[in-house]
Image (cartoon, rainbow, N blue to C red; front, side, top):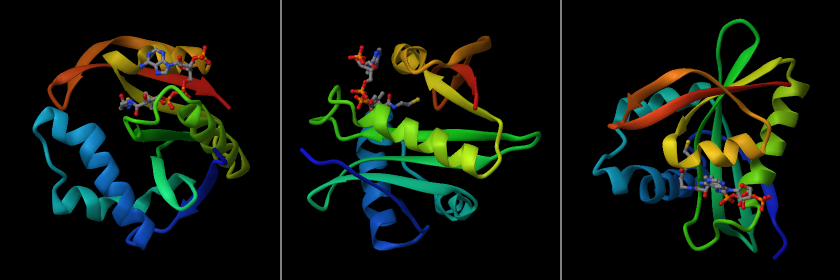
Length: 144
Ligand SMILES: CC(C)(COP(=O)(O)OP(=O)(O)OC[C@H]1O[C@@H](n2cnc3c(N)ncnc32)[C@H](O)[C@@H]1OP(=O)(O)O)[C@@H](O)C(=O)NCCC(=O)NCCS
């Protein structure tokens, strides 16, 4: 499989597919839906997508924060394609792009079930567990 990573615009056709993927992978299992306000606010984020032969396999967002930080959010890989390295490739490209733009720290809120993934990619836990979207999360970060 040849993986192609692409930065896309908010509200582009690729963005609509990415929202559908994120809804399936991240929201539906929790019985949640995106609100119009949440999706509108994503205009302030950078959108990375992963494709194989024009089929969308993964997506993530980067949202600038204060003090040189940028937050990686909504990291999702199609559930039939997980464990094949797609998440690792997307995170590497997100870190590279954030560095090119002058950000010095990547931060994120990791779901309990995904903490092991981020540990493998060099992220360190910060502080105590907290609840977000109804499930346990841990803040994690990495210097870029
Ligand atoms: C978590 C997720 C983004 C990882 O992407 P992926 O493409 O499946 O992961 P990769 O294949 O790139 O894995 C990279 C490494 O992390 C490991 N890994 C992947 N998911 C893991 C997990 N949930 N827990 C522990 N380790 C994990 C892999 O085994 C691999 O290790 P290796 O290099 O030693 O073989 C993806 O599985 C996913 O979308 N999960 C559901 C949604 C989710 O939880 N998103 C994160 C929200 S914070």
